[in-house]
Image (cartoon, rainbow over all chains, first blue to last red):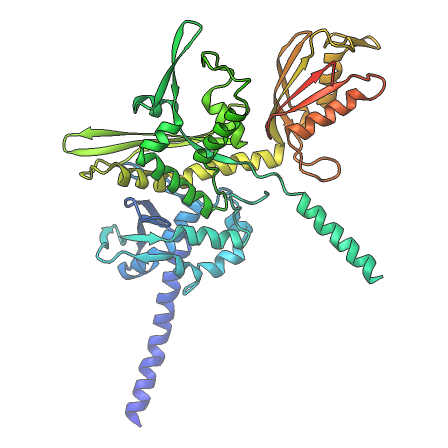
Length: 164
Length: 316
């Protein structure tokens, strides 16, 4: 009985700490603090990007790289160089992020739809300590054709064929 | 009552279906520079000057890289619901047409009324020409491919956008592999520019070129300086264009008593009945206006595709 009560106490004490960590992770990533760059020529229908994410915890930053990669492809675009071709953001109107806030809140929520369009390339993680936080770089493959089709279907962006 | 509602619904559906803008036709052609630097050209003597004219048929028959590039571009555009028109088929149709018109075509071949590209574009009835060129460059053992894809309005000649770049030096010597890589990497940027052009067309109208000509010694005895209530015909045409173009947008780079050229004419995409119109439809509206009282001018409208129209006044 004592053991059971002790276990219960430990769990009860840990819960706020875990919740705090989760909140922290959300705060770090909700701001979409990241850098995105081209990571080479990808196969047809995908972009290969390297995303550098900032967080006080390296593991949190690594987890958020997929989310940031998809966000970057939709809203930021990225520069080229050394044989890489620069790409403009998929959403040509910068106002769509606020215009469709509800859609994107659900799209980028933990376990949200964004996961379908990004996969981490194994063995590509780089971690750099910058001041009191970590900058974690991961190469992510973004299925941009599927992503574009989903955004077109949701009416967020216009298809090349729209209006004809 | 049910029948009445059904009829209204059907009419609305028909109206929405009609309100679609005509989809521009796109066709890939190798650029003049590419054709000439790869030896796909014929020399034509025109008024004592030898000119190199691209031989598209030879290029398509002999260059596998070109066929591959066109197939790849077609694949990528079809994925965006914009399949390309086939240049090969257009050339075949052109040859067929030439055979039929053989009696009227000069066999000496030294008077080019149209460039080979104009001929192909006319027969294919394409609106946007995608000019493609690429070149391999060597950096020691490595090779790199420079690539340009430029979209041009087939009728106004205006550049719509381009995608270009040089790939990273690679040990792969296979030009086909590097070309495919370059096409795939540059296609989204290219389509973004096409999209901007289409959006512009849908918001400020379709850009067309309008030429007005006069039949020499016509029976009606009119030219562009003929006066109606003290106003010259050319001024009346300008007035009509001012009222009927989108935001009164047009320019008149040249006008004489026999010819007037109007460029950058922005026509509405739909007419007052909600039907899609092109240069031909717009020219017919103008011709209709001057065929009526008090002008009674006989006019002939020549069909030149979606972006260009010619009205010849004086006779039918």
